[in-house]
Length: 382
Image 1: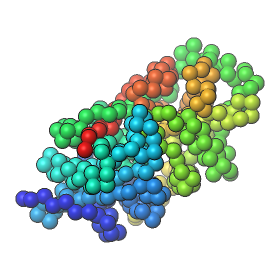
Image 2: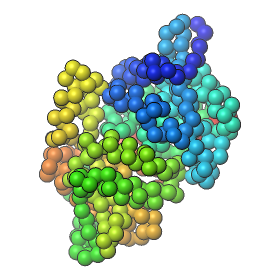
Image 3: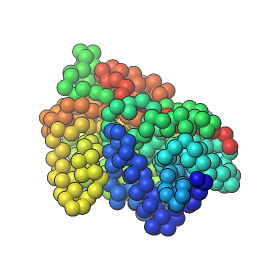
Image 4: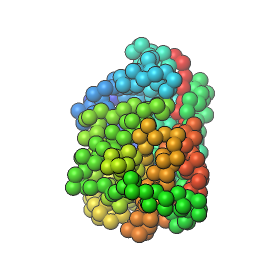
């Protein structure tokens, strides 16, 4: 039957868009259903501050009146202002939220997204990026045999072939690293950490949750500076900082956040989050009837949880120095020990990390972590 592509604009249509994605996720081995309410908020222009600097078109595919796929086409105005050598820049459109019942549907959706982006004046497309680079970037291409941790996507293996057969090629690879937190670091790393602990200029502290918004602003100020030269970097806006603070606060535990100060000045940070996906898989992403209670109990005391380090950064002025790696080792070691003591954590995941970020890859290798998942962002000229 003929495939019909239609936009999802109304509240009801956006709900159908979200529900279709949840249906695909439920049918994918090791995928974790996310909270429906959270997914609805992410595609709501009135609630997600991403829409304040983006043009977004949500599209659904129908065959015989039945929904068989979905995709987003979007343009981040902030990405258009970036240098082309950082992967974005003028003419950059994106696609995301890609799900399809078969290859024919997948190609029809990609073609429809490309047509919309072309009509908006875009000259090339990157994807999947759903929706912001800070949410779920990349298509899973390695690591399908285990579930993702918090804020990481999971996709069927055959999507890669469908996207590549539509003319897309790899633009950037993102890596995540698995770390056994029960294994002590090597003697060399322990000496580096000890040396930093004996340095009176360096002060390592946990986050102050009573002044959470101020702490978030310190962290994101460092992040916006530390990551500013990275491929695909798009700075957080003030509204996005407040939005992120509100979303992350229930998941943040002071023992899992570190801010490094040098001569009293914040210069580095690290955040680890307990893996809420373990609970979401148990309640199947549903708050009712009792999912909210299980989630609340877990968030207060996530015993036995795996941890993910989604963000870490050192001010750019210290990059390529011994101090940068020393601060990183000190933060990782402190959070590792506290995660074990407070929450009986046995494993953690670091990432994502750009495949050309040699500094972070060297740190990940030095602490004995191994690549366990790979994601690819694809590119195509329009």
